[in-house]
Image (cartoon, rainbow, N blue to C red; front, side):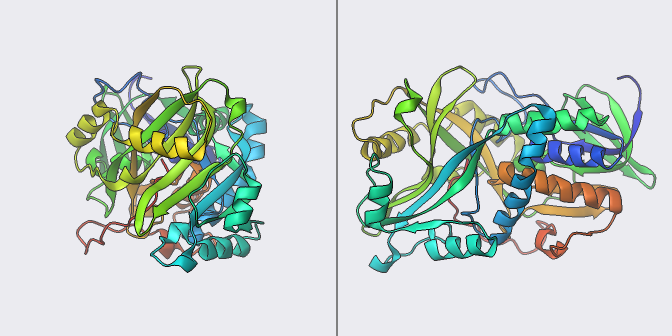
Length: 415
């Protein structure tokens, strides 16, 4: 594309939320340009933006807090079949979602993310069937798994594993089929005037639009595309991939597991059933307690983090847990991959107008499973100019770094 093309809306960021926003905009008749880089070939010498969706599996379920997160996810899930049918891209696979936690009756502090009563209440509010499992029922339901003594569970049997890479392909395919233009580039600047915005990419191309949606995820504050920084925090997360030779030997649910011993948390994070990665191999995926141990506050810090490949110390934690959880199973080599997440002080997405021409749409840890609904809401705000959804907009209004900054939330790894 040469010269300055004009669009109704330019979406900056081609990850799950940016791609979904572009789709919903195009389906409402807007002329749309979506700009974002393709996935890098590697991370050892990477220089530039990095996204959390470079992965093969994320949970899509209602066993989440706050309730609003589960509501956004359910709205997205209901559209999965139609999106898969229309694009031919299969990105959602049915799977039990099992959350395991210490029995609160034995004392100790259990995080909200592992409070079975809260999770069950949220599921009931959304009319989604779940089953609460005692220690004995947990062992009987999943006889091949060895959970720590004194742990209980809650299971949603109609949950999904979403392949975020494939989800992005489907969203972009649907957007392009409705006329959206996709450019694989990095946006360096957004200039605003009374008439709209002028967006310039790293390659030097420029485009104009009436509005711009900034959907750049964990890199939003370091990208310099907003007039001021958001109240949000970015972290370098670590994914541990443990190779298995025969995935059929690991017929296990996708799990959120908080393992404690006495008053100590031994593990808190995810264990994903075997997934096939782009190298053709099958891996169990783990992401544990180190999620918020690596704050990243600049583009240079992100680059340094990505080049580390993740925290290699997490391999031992994951292997120790899997060896106990899956007795007698042969585990192959393990390695790490870098991931990035962000969190907001509300624990909810920001979907808000920044100024007359700019909308921001970000979500960190749970972006993949709720992305389609976040994109729909962002598209509606861009086209209508006002909030029209039944959920109060106050839940998603952006907070800015100049205001009093809330302390970081201690959440569970969902990378």
